[in-house]
Length: 212
Image 1 (tube, rainbow, N blue to C red):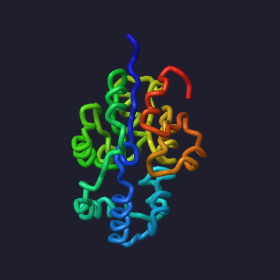
Image 2: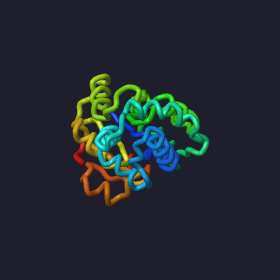
Image 3: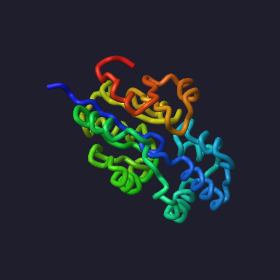
Image 4: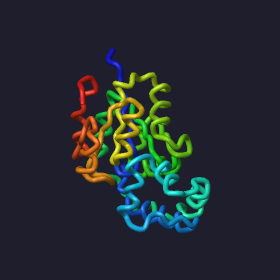
């Protein structure tokens, strides 16, 4: 019997088109706690060149205060305005037949679950590892690999930012960068991901046994 691979998906920018909603919400949170380090969308995107929380801490943001501010600000987000990227359901259905699928994200697990249900994606994902579990995506990837007993060479992290590529690399799994999300193709290509995918259907071309 062939061993299943583990496909770990980022949420925002891979499954959900949510950039404008969160750029605005995070900017307002940072203003609320007196560290307005984000003044435009490009400065927000720069937070994801590495780990989001580490990037904010490096800019002097009190993460405890920020977490408290999100509890006050994020409930006002218009989640009905969040849309899924098109073309994903048949791809997820095909992947789920032969592989384990889970979500690894800096977003909250409850929000992710709510959106997966609304998008019709929920049946395809085994589990969600959000910020309420661990801050570091590397640690979440490590945990998922150990939990499911998957060799690292059979695990993939599918993300849309430079930080996602770096965290996949730090975790010793193969990085899959998609170009329909938050960071553009050139920014992703500069970090040499194992796979660079331009359409959801491209995810089906990944060979779990072959090299990147």
